[in-house]
Image 1: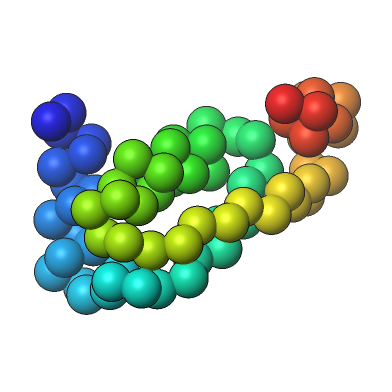
Image 2: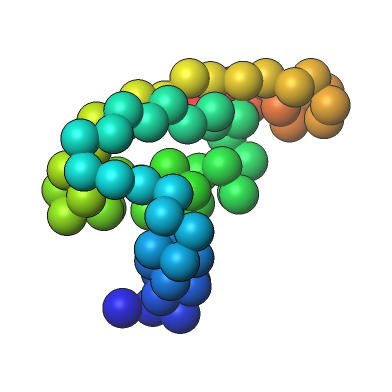
Amino acid sequence: MKAVEQKFMKFVKAQKLISNDDRILVALSGGADSVCLTLLLIKYAVSFKYELGAAHINHQLRGAEADEDEKF
């Protein structure tokens, strides 16, 4: 397991952020941080047994780059 995954799992467990049968909606802008979070949530959905959905959010803070993220 990579260091970022270990930190993610340690934090989620310590804070009791996710429980079995939760339904999680992640706001996905297309930037590196929200994509990383989404990928981690996808990876661990089976072990935590939660439902995961994603909603795209274009904050319109980075002009054309944000528009490209939206297309992604």
